Image 1 (cartoon, rainbow, N blue to C red):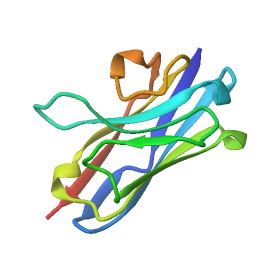
Image 2: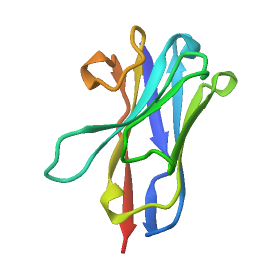
Image 3: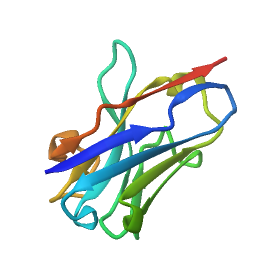
Image 4: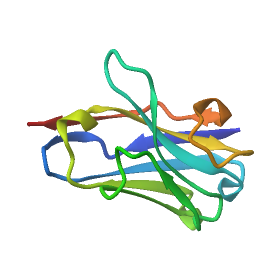
Length: 123
């Protein structure tokens, strides 16, 4: 079992920045690829970014390329999502998820999910 807890969300003006954190407990964190997903009201959950087991590979949705950076610190069992140049359309609940088998944008490949953190970007 892996437990994931997100933090770092909040209210920010357009153009601002936030850094989300996802802290894991349980089994060896470095055995899991981690992804960030988001879900806005009335919309389906969508992929944001993923980082591989070692952190050497990353993958971004087009919506975040050039603005978002995912990274991990396995010594701290933590994955980060640095979000810059935020836009109102980035408003959503952001979730981190862990996969023991895949480094992917496909949400059903992820085994464990956090409870989410709200990000609100005002115009």
